[in-house]
Image (cartoon, rainbow over the protein chains, first blue to last red):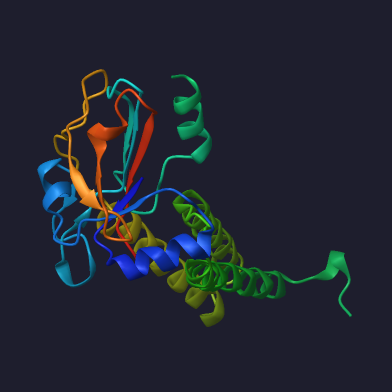
Length: 89
Length: 140
């Protein structure tokens, strides 16, 4: 599931463009993202708050098994790393 | 045409200065172009190294011949390297704070609407399937 402050229309467009089938969840006011401690204050355009780029792997029992937090906006975890974490469940 | 043996330092210095300028400016242009292309990850290591190499070439060219072209190549490439370093190490930093997700602990629950507006609750996946959550900054 991918979570962003984007409006639904934009997420639908993105899902179609990327041809992916996972859920795109909208958190327009970042209320949930903030509660989870994943906001980068003033990190967006014009000093707006944005999510910290974060990837979390949760197992079938609902336990967090793997987490990657960006410390640089430009860098994301390698998709192969995420796959490895999922396969290790 | 000049023979390899007979190339005076001034000409070699000019070639190196042009090479440094092309590499430095080309790196910045390539960065700007790649930024527009989808799904190509930005690699700070690549552009910082390219600019560092450009500065190195410019230093050699200035050492060979101290002309305006050589000095400009050094100034331009060094300036771009400094700007790129500030961009990467200062502007692009994300502060790290405590997260509600702790490896080994149960994930905190939340409910958010999906792209069709239907609410999706994380806890509904418990006992059914694993979940990968990706928090991203959104389109900009």
